Figure 1: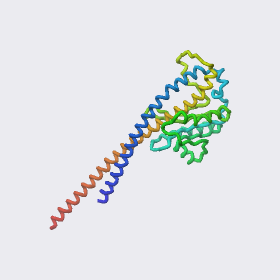
Figure 2: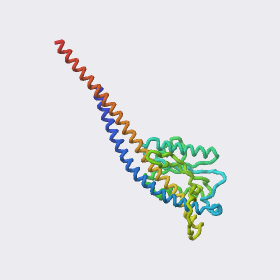
Figure 3: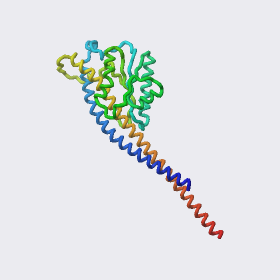
Figure 4: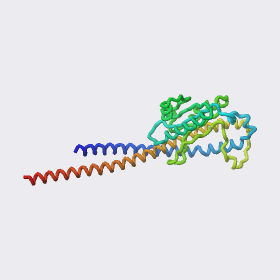
Length: 286
């Protein structure tokens, strides 16, 4: 029965693993629903900001606001990579890192110096492994990001952009389309580019005190909101990817469990048949 005992041990181990993966799937489903609600709640505000910015933006005003400045050549750029602090989410972090590497390689091929800012332990661990120096590391942002988190990420880069030390800022994040579709995406946050198509809705605005004063407050707010949306979408995408990965692991554990149980039953039946044959043979010999 050595083989039978070994199979029973493996069955018990797989059953325990399936319990863990099923629990993690349920937790990820609950967290994903809350994160998805935050994504949906952030979109109307961002759309309204983009619409107002598009209506106010003009070539004359753009020359007077540093955040709208478009340099002739990108000499130095910053890339903010958003990953998770935990794994067990399938290829979620690997896809984000791959997207960031492609963006960095593209900028460096164009002759730009690139500073990499990483959010999340998984991204930090990868760049430490490959030996690349990071401009900033953040592991304190949870799966419930706030507007203050976004401001702490991008305010220093906005100041550097205004001073001319940085010519472009990109954010690599996960775009939350649905629980099953969370592709990596690269978003340019500086210089500010008003959303395309936002001017199709014609509205009349009463501007007070002036367009210049409004843009002075609106542009930094728009940049922070863009980074905040990237954070909440990445958080929701992480939970969606973890839910999918844990569901797949639970299903696979069930299939392995069925196979092990069939193998154990066959081994047990073979042993019983052998014991009966030995008893019958012994009785016949007597």
